Image (cartoon, rainbow, N blue to C red; front, side):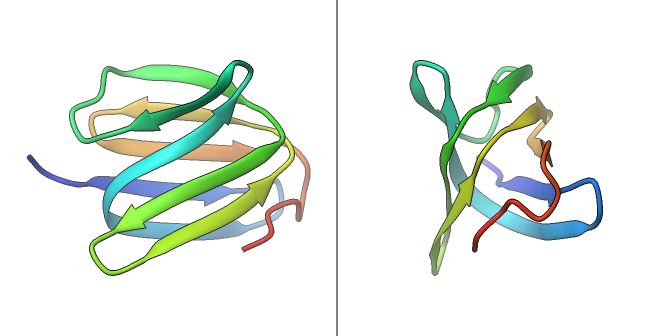
Length: 88
């Protein structure tokens, strides 16, 4: 099925760059959406909440306040709108 590549950046720096992500859940206005490999391409606004990243060996929780996510061909770019807002 393949895996996802996730890059999280803020206005100031690159926060996280991780390959081989099995799935990622993103906080959106109506709750959350989970992105799996081969997900339809989309751009969405992110809201206050947690990003959950699942890899083969780990689950990471990242608290965010707001941002934008771009899903395109198994690559996910997340731009955080407030600098230094991610809490790993």
